[in-house]
Amino acid sequence: MSQARFASCLPLPLEQKVLVNIIEKAKDWALMHGVGMRDKKHFNKDTIQIAPFVLLPSPFPRAEFTKAIELQPVLNELMHKVAHDDGFLESTLQNALQVDEFTANLYNIWITVRNEGISQSLSLGLFRSDYLMQNADRNAIKQVEFNTIASSFGAITSNLPAMSRYILRQLGHGDLIKNMPENRALSGLCSGITEAFDLFGVPTAVVLFVVEEVSYNICDQRFHEFYISETRPEIQIIRKTMNEIYEETELNDKKQLIIDNKPVAVVYYRSGYEPAQYPSSKEWDARLRVERSTAIKCPSIAYQLAGTKKVQQALAVPGVLEKFMGGGNATERVRDIFTGLYSLDFDENGERAVEMALEDAERFVLKPQREGGGNNLYGSDVREALIRMRHSRERAAYILMERILPPLVPGYVVRPGAAVPPPITDLVSELGIFGVIIGTKEKIFYNKQVGHMLRTKLADANEGGVAAGLGALDSPYLI
Ligand code: ADP
Ligand code: MG
Ligand code: MG
Image 1 (tube, rainbow, N blue to C red):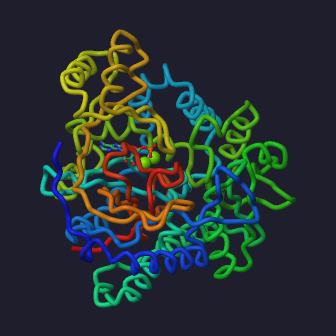
Image 2 (tube, protein in one colour; image 1 turned 180 degrees about the vertical axis):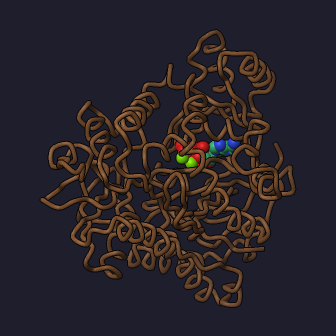
C-alpha cells in the first residue's frame, strides 16, 4: 500500500531549538484557550490537560474542502428525509436489529413513540459528515460516515485556526495564514440549539445537555454552554446523565419534560450513542421518556437511526439516492463521495460481499452499528470475523466498506506527557463538516453548513478518534 505524500506547509524538520520553543508556546496557548481534555488516567475535575494536537496545520486540497462545505446542506436534507421515511428505515434496519440488541432497543423506542403519536414533530440535527481523501482517486474526498448524535469537537476546533495563526507567526510565517479557513462551528452549532429553543416558544423553558457519567471532553461541551450563556443569557442550561434524567424528570399531562419544575425545550445528547451509556433499564426508560416528550430532541431517535452505518450502506444501493433526491446534479455529487459499501445481510448479495472480502480482506473495513470509535475491524480481523460469521445471521449487524487510503502528510504531533520534541511522523487527516438542520417531516426551517474539524492520526493507526486517544486536533491548510 503505497500512498502519495503531501508536503508540510513549512519545510521540515524545524531546527531543534525552534521546535522545542514553539511547542512550549503552543502548549500554553492550548491550555489557556481550552484546547484541552480531562486526563483519563488521573481523572481530576480541578485540572485540564492539553488535547493532542498537530503542531502545523495539515495540507488539504482546497477544491475538496470546498466540495465538502457545499455538500453539507444537501446531506443535511438527505438525512432529514431518510429519518422521516418510516418504511425505508424499517426495511433497512430489519435484519441488523434481529441480531444487534443496541439497535433493536433504539428501534423499539422509535416504534413505541410512533404508535403513541409523536408529540414533537420538530427535530434538531447537529450533524457531522466525515471524509478521508482517497489517494488512488485523485485525493477526492470519500465519506467515512455521517454522525447524527453527539458530533464532537466543533467547539474546540473553532479555536484551532487562532492557535495555528499564533504558531505560524511565532515561526515567522504569518504569510501562510491566508490559506487557513476560519472556523465558526461553535457559534453555528449553538445557533442550532437557540433556534430550536425559540421555535419551542416557551421563554421560561430550559435546555438539557445529556452527558456521560464522566466527561473527559469537557472543554468541547462547556464551550457550547458558555457561548449560549454569553449570547442568550436568559437560556438556562442543565447538564444531566441518563441516570439523573431517569431520577429527576417527569412528563406532565401536556407531555412536557419537566426538570426542576421547568419544561425542557431542547435535549442535546452528548451521551447515549453507545451501549455502555445504557448500563441498566433505567437509562433506556429515561431515553423513552425524553422521546415521548414535547422537547425538541437533538437528535430525535429517528435521526439517530438514520445515522447508522446500515443506513449509510443502504443509501449507496443503486436507485436509492434518486428516490430521496431525484436524478439531478446534486445526486451525482453525493454519489461521488460514496466509496464501496456492501450489505452483509444473510442473502445472495451478502454472500457475494463475504466472498469478495475473503479474497482480499486488506481492501475492506468491517463496521458494526456503533459510534464513538474503536468498533471497526481491519485487515486480518476482517477475514477472521467473516469466517466466523459466514453461516450466521449475526453478520447482518455489520456492513462492509471499502478501505480508503489517504495521502500521507509528515508532521509533529504534540501529546500530553509525551517527550519533546516529538519525532516527525507520517500522518493522515480526516475532515469533518458540521451541519445544522431543524424541521418537521413536512417542512425544513433551518439548514446550514456551520464549520469544520480536522482530526489527524498516525498513518499506520486504523482509527484516529481524539477522545479515544489516537488522533490529534488539526486545522486544514488549503493547497
Ligand atoms: P465511528 O462512528 O465509531 O467514528 P467510523 O466509521 O467513523 O466510526 O470509523 C472510525 C474510524 O475508522 C474513522 O475515523 C477512520 O479513521 C477509520 N475508518 C472508518 N472507515 C474507514 C474506511 N472505509 N477506510 C479507512 N478508514 C476508515
Ligand atoms: Mg460516528
Ligand atoms: Mg467516526
